[in-house]
Amino acid sequence: MITNTSIPTDNIYKFYAIFGLAIIITCVISFLNIYNSYNEKAYERFIELKVLEAIDEINPRQAAEKQLYEIQNKVEKENKDFYMKCIGFLMGLGLFMMLYGFYYWETKVQPRLDKLIEQSSSHKKRMKIKHNRTKHNYLKN
Image (tube, rainbow, N blue to C red; front, side):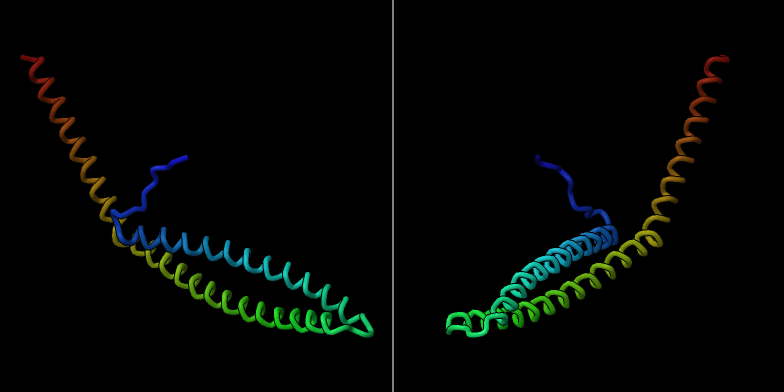
């Protein structure tokens, strides 16, 4: 399915607001994805480590596996921490962009548009009244 939705380029504040919102949504999805992925992997390694620790005499292969699982735990935790910091930064950036865009859109641009629409509609009403008067005068003659 092809959609013809385009990014709003008529107003920079509108673009900031919508782009900031898109960043926030992406960050929330990424956070949930990374969090669930980390927990699944940690759970699997935890079980394997407990099984290997329960063995009284482990052979060299099992010792290597145990060491590998411990290293994987450390690396995965460091990766998760780094990803969460990046997501936190991007979430803050997206929130700032969204609030900045919506605020200035609402306070700078929208009042001007409302005034323009009001002037346009009052002008159309005057033209309609003038047209009706001319039509009415024409019918009288």
